Amino acid sequence: MQQNSLWQAVLGEIELSVSHGNFVTWFKNTQLLQLTDETLVIGVVNVFMKQQLQVKYADLLLQTLQKNGVNPKTIEYKIVASQKSKPETEESLLVAAPAGGATRSATTSPAPTQTAPTRHGNSLSHSYRPGINERYTFDNFIVGASNELAFAACQAIAANPGTKYNPLFLYGGVGIGKTHLIQAAGNAFLANNPGAKVLYISTEQFVQEFVDALRFRKTAEFASYYRTADMLIVDDVQFIAGKDKMEEEFFHTFNALHQGNKQIIISSDRQPKDIPTIQDRLRSRFAWGMTIDMQIPDFETRVAILQTKASDHGVHLPMDVADHLASNVATNIRELEGALNQLLAFCEMRGLEPNLSIATSLLGVAKTRPKHLSAKQIIERTARHFQIPLEDILGPKRDKDIVVPRQVAMYMLRSELHLSFPKIARELGRKDHTTAIHSVEKIEKESQLDASLRTAISEIKERLYA
Ligand code: ADP
Ligand code: MG
Image 1: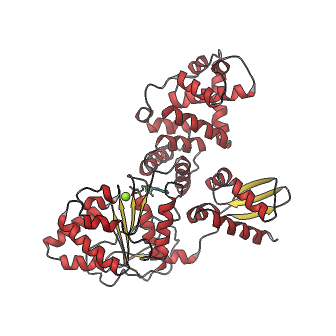
Image 2: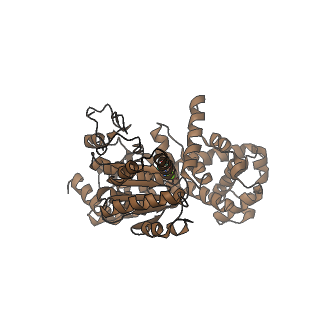
Image 3: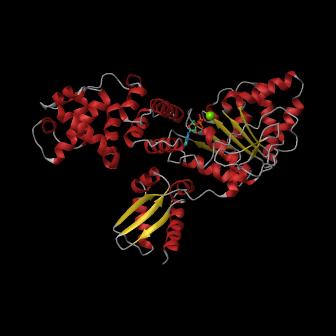
């Protein structure tokens, strides 16, 4: 079989066994670069794609290859430039500006030539803002177990609005990607239907506009503006609760759109039944379509998000730094991004490469770390993780399966407690502090290359801070 058609066959099968989001994120842009009896070389777009394929999809890849009659001894990955920029997406990303008629273009689109403004709907004489931000796309949304379903539903809706999941109700805590995803749905829908009237509103803004409309006696205009949308995206709907007139207005808007098979997407920080004081008739409508719970992305996904965002800035983020940020900022992607931006800005101003000690000091150890963690706990936890007796890690033995855990323990004492090297040496029963320096450096370096070592470190940390 030709290389190319072999790879198409393999991808075709994989597409059937993983979610669409994962397929697009991890497989779609791969290519088969080389195939010999010994080795298969897969071209990937970036380092976390390589990592994800190696860590998560190694078995699936090998099995699928074997099914197609290929059984390489090793699979290698090579990072090659992305080959996916299709001109049509550039064009379709052109989104009309609200009222002025000027055209904004996506940042990814170099000097667009089609500048004919695409207008939203027909009436532009109002002052309401469509509010869609083209920065939020499916392409730059990283998919993991926590958001896979939401991602798939949003994609389905963008392709087939107003049919299956209407309304789509996404809920989950702050900063976990709800706004990103529902706006991405709007952007994708617009890309397929350039003339469509897609309205995104934060509920606070919706309420404010409604109050203004009441004041200036423009409620009819307000109503007809929203009721003629092709897609209405309402963000943080919990803020509507208890505002009776607004709920009433929204109820009618909802009905008009729903009856016209226009897609409605709603986000909230909690599920419909937990929004207090909202009218029951609205609550029950929210549950008509599909309700999906979004969680904070897991550790691996957080690392992938960091890697993407750093590479968007043209910066290479060392693995230990990404791991450190991802394990310390574990509740909220917005905060995670904030921590990354702070680190990148700090390094850029000083002409430094991001490294673990800068990341640790910027994150403010005290903020996230319980104070009571002791050197002893770290050493014990490390020994237990590697299943060796405590007296061995502290003792004189020099076997490899004792030395590596000991070095990891030293590394952890440095990264978690910032102990001095002489103190680290003493904690592990060593006389010479250069051993500690050497060990910490060695683990720092090796954890960049060795995924299983990184996993060990983050598992130990997770236990320590659990
Ligand atoms: P929410 O609306 O749930 O409070 P946002 O959608 O505003 O959260 O997300 C906060 C930030 O985190 C945004 O900048 C968003 O782009 C980013 N983000 C969240 N989840 C992801 C993800 N899975 N991949 C890429 N970026 C993400
Ligand atoms: Mg939001």
